[in-house]
Amino acid sequence: MEQFATAVQGFISLLARLLIAVIFLASAIGNKIPQFAQTAEYMASEGVPNPKFALFGAIGLLLLGGLSLIAGAWTRVGAGFLFVFIAAATYYFHDFWTFADPSQRQLQTIQFMKNLAIGGGLLSMMAFGGGPWSVDGWIAIKREEAESTPTSKSRSAAKPQQQAS
Image (cartoon, rainbow, N blue to C red; front, side):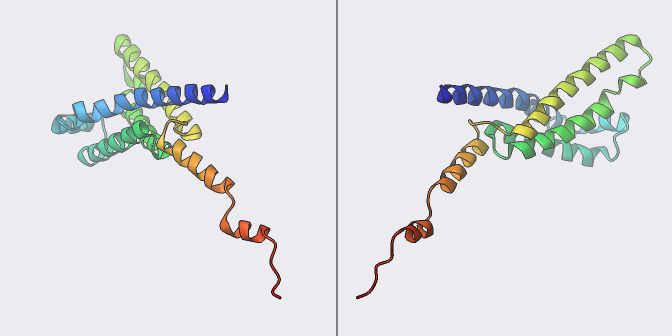
């Protein structure tokens, strides 16, 4: 039963990592990289300081964080990168409190709340890691196996010493 539970947990954590990573990777590869100049102009219009530099940083966070989640390697760090990105993007681009038009205010409130939910998922990954079906999980298993295996020093210490005649 424990193996089944581990398999279910592994599958669900993998699926969660993939679903969260895809939105960030698609944003970088499908929008920010091919439309770099237009995106930087839009960022400037929204008040982002030094928009070209910020966009380079954003693309780095998106790519490194997204690939990290997919592989489940350094999952906590990758989720942290994406959390930094989404926190900044939410503040600058979904500032619903600045809109007078009720329909725009509602749209930006929805986007803000969506980003809060994604941020919650990222915080969960930062807290619990990538799960058993991840590089991080595999490393944890190998580390536990190594720590539970007696070392050569402890084996030699357990053997009785033969006295010389």
